[in-house]
Length: 172
Image (cartoon, rainbow, N blue to C red; front, side):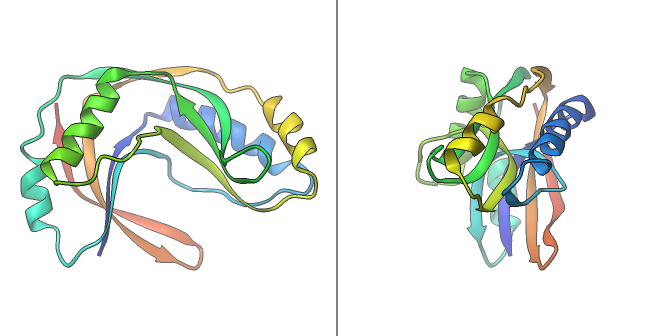
């Protein structure tokens, strides 16, 4: 099974992200797949045989409720070669600490954490410079929300996109 740890977001934040997606869908030359469900990934675990041990370890993570603000549009790996269009999160040390705690209990490698929400995966664009200019004109309404839990999800890859199944929620 394929697992990841994430934070769910409230409707107001989801609405702001969907509004940005609508503007992306209207851009010429963009061939993208748009996610149906938004979440903030703390750690992608990947393929594992079972989840019992992971669930047990995640129960030991302790954190205090904190706030996160979404803001700003960007691309991975770069604006010259966009493959993923995302909305970022303003610097929040508590979010970094939670991600580090999750990775710590799972004995996972602590790679660079770049909190973001994927808006689209880019298949092909005609003109990267034109794409950048138009994309940077898309305004993202900053939305602040409280984080009081994180979740373990099972992800199943389907032809129409991934399907997520909640395995367990962990509260602050």
